[in-house]
Amino acid sequence: MNIKASRLFNILLVLMVVLASACAGDSSSSSSKNGDSSSSKKEYNDEVVVHQLSDPTGLHPTNTSDAGATEIKRLLFQRLLEYGQDLNLLPLLASEMPTVEKTANGGMIIDYKLRKEATWDDGKPITAEDVVFSYKCIRNPKVDAASTRPYFEFISEMKTYPDDPYRVTMIADQVNFLWDHITGTDIVIFPKHKYDPNGESDKFTFEQIASGDKSIIESPENIKFTDRFNNIKYQREEIYGSGPYELVEWNTDQNVILKRKQNWWGDKMTGTNMYLEKGPNIVKYQTVNDRTTALTAAKGGELDILAPLRPRDWVEDIPKSDKIQDNFNKFQPPYLYYSFIGMNTRDPKLSDKNVRKALSHLVDVELVNEKLLYNMAQRVVGPIHPTSPDYHKSLEMYDYSIEKAKQILKDAGWADTDGNGIIDKVINGKKTDFKIEFNYNQGNDTRKNVGLILKESARQAGIEIDVIPMEWSVMSERLKANQVKMWYGAWVFDPRPSAPKQIWHTTSYGGGSNYTGFGTAETDNLIDQIEKEIDPAARKKLYHKWQEILHDEAAYIFLFTADNLMLVHNRFDKSSVVESARNPGYNVLSLKPAAGYSSTLN
Image 1 (cartoon, one colour):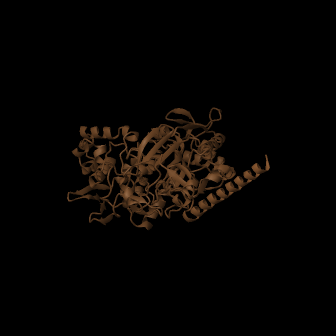
Image 2 (cartoon, helix red, strand yellow; image 1 turned 45 degrees about the vertical axis):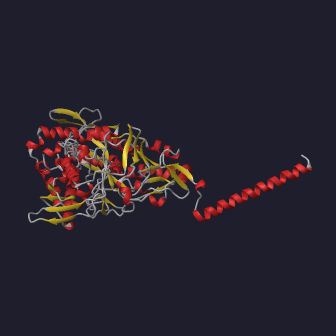
Image 3 (tube, one colour; image 1 turned 120 degrees about the horizontal axis):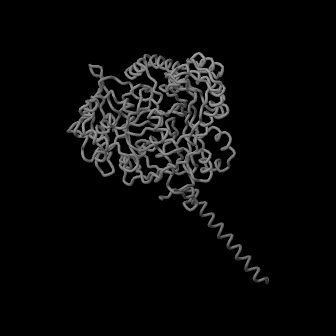
């Protein structure tokens, strides 16, 4: 290169540096005034991908109540009331908190007023007629809502007002201390003109349904209506709600995709409460039925929210993963749930409470907590959360003791009479080996390993347990049909005093949530008294008496409660996650882009 050319090259190089510096200076100046410039922000599709272990059982407004379905339905449907971040009730479809007054005959009058702004997707207003229809459906014995129906039995009448279509009054023939929780949050409201387009339910009143009038319940008109209302098309094809999202796609065992509605009525009320916020355009519930695979998918950028995580992943894998550390925020709110091993008390091998007590002594709970849960769980002794004043903390836990179990079984008449290593007993005139299945939902390694630990302990006591996984929807249906003998389960509940009727009352057996079949006249009476007792101190005594009986009968082997271990992608602002003790532990509607990120509609 000659000297002139070299000088020219150097001059051009200097000019390029100066220009680059000038551009950088402009960018820096813009950034200092307005934050990150739009050109420097990381763009992402306006969606959030949420991990779920299995598909929901369905999205019917009344006929599904599992935790997965409930989480998704909260975005499709709405309730009269909801729980705020502080876990106190707040009005949603109701325009204000309801009023209540006691009647002279020992009942209650509950009065609701509806938001006049609230409409269905076709623009029709949400009125008292829709509320009465929703309640009429859940009270109808022919509707497949046995798991939640018992809560509403205290309501005997519903009143509407011709001059005010936004007012509805519920009349109860007895007091229920959970009246506001039950009437406000235990049922979603859905449009009568969509779920009963032919007006078939108009042929009978709410009062007739609530009275249990057989001539009405068994009438051809009611059977025609309920057959159509129970149809599977309302589980996943035709979903009509007032919530901010609509179902656009459901790929079995892959994902459930929701899309934010255009011109949703709540958009005009942004800022009113956390359920009227404008969330991501797309919410995708991605089914990955193996937790290890799900965590790998998160590392690969395929999942945005995972909860609850396994303690093993939280303690061992996540701290070692640069991809997780760089791309996710960790959250650990309290979790309103408890886990348990359930036993079908109506099975001949498990009908003796002493056998169930023996099995309770065969679960090495401390070993499970140490090896599987990394000592992050808290053992529970009953079905009420330990944070509640009604929890009976004085009850003594069943300790792990194979010798105690063997002695109890021996006293109950079980012995290895043929030397095959399995204890047996004559039941209904037939020698029966103590062999039993233990089921857990497929993909949950923790539950599988608990079953394997129990299997080994039981083997030493002469019991043969087969640990068998089951796809969740199948397991759920078999539980409802009371066809499962032993299983690992968990109940997630709302932030309110315990309402035992759904799980523990005998009226909830056979289609309801009383999967163990346990219940006596005494426990039923205690549950009925609990519902009616307004005084917290008196109600606490009833709770304690009921828990003492449950502990002695050992229908459940109560295990743990723990925090909700969550990962949320850091492209969402950390403060917008809105942690809550209520499942799922966050509010999708509150999620906003973090600084440096810009969402684009997809």
